[in-house]
Length: 462
Ligand code: ZN
Image (cartoon, rainbow, N blue to C red; front, top):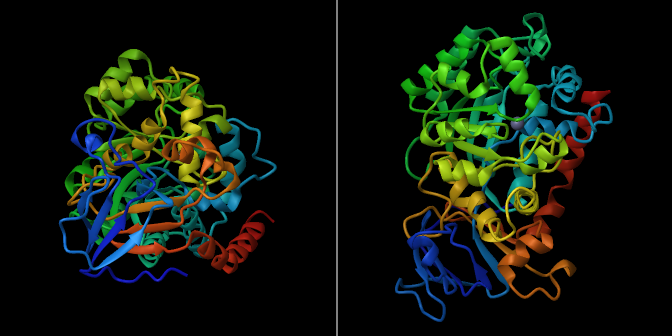
């Protein structure tokens, strides 16, 4: 298992990587030549070294990275960890969003604290092995047994040493109110608001280098009441936390909102006081041109989930239009029941391929998708201390060895990482600590966890 050693004040030079991506595709951070590597001290990057140069910082240790590609840690902006227990469920696969949800809700109503603990652990390891140093989760299923679901998740991410944004999700409209979920997984508005306040007070750390942040996240505008949407926005403002929900995922959703709420989703978002830079949306696909301009003017964040959107045939996110309008675009794997994998580096590959169906090949480069998965995702989560390799930023980084058959004969190592299909890091550092020192060894050490998780998954659907 990972050493998770505390970072020391020793200066470590990660020396001469095969290729480096800074996280940025424009501005001064994109211009810097980082092929000499980076120097890490304590929890932060203290120096970036140009190709062929020596660090100015006195060095205590060196790591020869000449056979590895160096990236800022990838940042996942949207997930549902519990869904790792319902991957590839025969009754749910091959369906669009609404019937898919109706099939799965009764199963999810049987989740227990042990399910949440192991599912969080599996999803985080899967993300970390693929290069993610920051994870976000949207947990909105609170049956009678799961009143402490977010507390469990907070314990797990703290134990693993991964940086996290946990969102307190909610559902208050069940089937009897015209919603999709059964009664057993919805809560009253007061229960939701009281618990949201308790959790933000207990766990939200807004400081630089924070390892855990909280956000408030009604599942979707069609699964909570209007008053809960409004009250959640007020509470988030009062507590200084961000707002998150699913929006613009399918055409069905637009029709549902028009029919039930009398307005389109973006109008409803504005009506409920959500249009501002504190909000990020999962998916963000089905907007008209005027709505894209309004979302951009409000500096809304978009968690772009290409794999899920392809699996559920939901549509193609207008990423470049949203970004041109002023939105922040970041990357996310979405829940494991609609992906069904939590591999961040593969998500970037899928984004490149999917987005080229909408935009020109020269507009969707490997640099672009790497930027969305790093600096873009950091902006979506409202963070300036991660997502870029630069002095003063958190030392969150991934190192990939291109030693698989799929890389043999590749010329540009950074492009190869995306185009040849990397899937696993060799090393992963979060806040200056090595969380993974050898990807292959770590994966082999997770067999026991995997067996327990798989057994619980079988029991859940039995
Ligand atoms: Zn989702």
